[in-house]
Image (cartoon, rainbow, N blue to C red):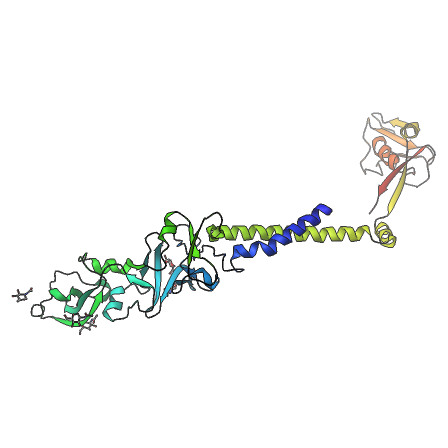
Length: 381
Ligand SMILES: *[C@@H]1O[C@H](CO)[C@@H](O)[C@H](O)[C@H]1NC(C)=O
Ligand SMILES: *[C@@H]1O[C@H](CO)[C@@H](O)[C@H](O)[C@H]1NC(C)=O
Ligand SMILES: *[C@@H]1O[C@H](CO)[C@@H](O)[C@H](O)[C@H]1NC(C)=O
Ligand SMILES: *[C@@H]1O[C@H](CO)[C@@H](O)[C@H](O)[C@H]1NC(C)=O
Ligand SMILES: *[C@@H]1O[C@H](CO)[C@@H](O)[C@H](O)[C@H]1NC(C)=O
């Protein structure tokens, strides 16, 4: 009992002082790595300078690095750019400080063409330089050296994007200019560049610079709750090293332990209350399942009753009575019968012997038998 109480105290101590740090709700210094997807393959680790909106305290991430999980597809990580809206995060590369995003509508060229993409107000920048492109809407008949943008083209018209400086306006007479825009496709532009842009569009960040910390495999974060100074702490001294999965496992484990302790506590209380219950309660318990004392005969007395072996012609002591009243079996030749001498009733010897061990009376007429009685203490229902 004292052991259990000590365990309960230790458990409560752990629950109130230790767990909240792991869940990441208690203090700004406890910023666990998180993710939208729990699958190891599709999971994108979210840690400083990024943070999952609403899940972690605000001081776990740098301003502008908030990400969220798609409400209708919880495994999808979303980045909301202040002037361009939601993008799907495909990967975060902490060591190179790069971020790969994709357009939810799967047509990033359209966003450039319609001037619907801007990094203004965000901490991110384009990895490649920007180049001025002219977008043309051409008849399907026009042969161009540039590949068409498949998500904007159909069987009748194809949309192409050409670097503005190399365009020859007299040549494509079957084309009309849609717009010009700066596109992050400098240098390495190839015919499939536009489609490449659709699923691999890279952004970079310079501030905060945590590369020194990531390189040594440590955990980057704010030095304290107020300043924007960075701190690089060992993964072992910091709880940030715990993955979300580990966090869940830990929380679940603690929850199970909690339930076990609560059940144990309830049982313990119930037992100790029962132990201190007044005697009346005990006697009612006894009354419901009364003790029954049955008195049988000892072996010597039973053996003293006369036995009869039935012959081939099996002449019965009472010719009209050929059934054993105990086992309801008919008497057969060569079977042994026993008679209770006091009342002259007879039975199969093996049936009545068992009976007499439990009860000293004849099973038929309830006449008490004489002899040495043995007490059997049994509880009856
Ligand atoms: C969120 O997921 C749903 C279902 O997969 C999808 O239709 C929707 O476009 C996603 N939202 C964004 C912003 O990507
Ligand atoms: C949910 O998001 C993941 C990751 O972006 C994607 O692979 C998957 O197809 C999406 N599921 C649905 C139903 O849109
Ligand atoms: C792109 O080039 C076109 C024509 O050369 C020019 O009119 C336009 O201002 C340029 N756009 C930008 C954003 O530099
Ligand atoms: C291209 O031009 C045709 C005919 O004017 C038009 O129907 C189509 O919507 C245009 N496509 C784009 C992407 O502007
Ligand atoms: C533009 O087109 C005209 C006529 O087809 C051609 O003579 C000229 O060389 C072209 N210029 C460029 C820069 O491609």
